[in-house]
Image (cartoon, rainbow, N blue to C red; front, top):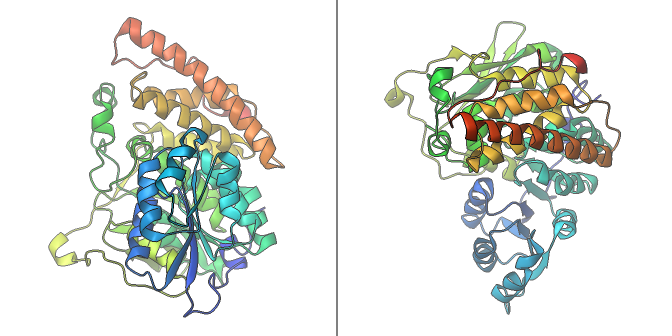
Length: 430
């Protein structure tokens, strides 16, 4: 099983761009999102070192056009076919080829490139990212849902096809930098740090009435709405627990979460001799992205230098799984294995979308995920098609649970979450 023995990123480790001094060809999946923006900012500052092969977006066609006109990739793909005419019109005369639709997104990931940046948010990024892995590309993995939904499939395919998986999440990138890949038996535990989000000090009662605006207002990081909500519920950290278990050969019970509000220590690796190695840096996603773009070399990044004297102190505290049950649900799904993490992710995506649409309350998000985990059947997934089938069933169950809560909210008052009728979270799945 992936996650045992030598980790997938190292089994496949090779320079993704041929000669170290050559121009590196890069495809960016999800170029109009926050990760895509940061990636293109770095590439734009180093145009002699990088050549953009393909850019993709789902609906933000105007931004995609602007990016393509600036960087002149060979291909630009819009996921929504209804927007293809506008894309083609905007790129007319530029020499940039335009395509549209889900199959075109997957095909873009297979274009000859040295590195594919996987920045599409959610399960929607799974098929294109798997295609990049299938074609042996080095993948800068910013989409944690890929490993959550299909970790064993992806890491096994990476090992088979010689595709390096380079984590871009700041926490996993930090671990990658300080992990002893050659002697993993020396690692005692992994510590994932978490900012705690905007509600770190809030009680459950206070979180009942939080608004969308409050939930997306992260105190440290600037991210998209979905990731910001995941940070507020701490589901983001739960997904990262599962991702870390897929990427690094460390047992589940030796992966910990520690709240670190300053977001300076991005994660730590503890060794059996008592040493603890940490990667520190200013909270700026351009640092881990730069690491992946230049790996195994390093490149200059326009981030503010870390000034520890000015910061003065770094604080840490334990994670509270009572106030943030998403962490507990993620651990239970990870322990249950099989398709349980797929179910967890699908239900969370449905619930977060409903909260952003103001159909449910903030605390309903975790409640819907828990009820879906209780109701859905889990099994081993031997193919991507089986993963998608589980994903679809989980989304149906989560939507049903969401509609019950929406109706109850409308009748009982917007601030009251509806408790689950089931006695325990993934008890029937293990």
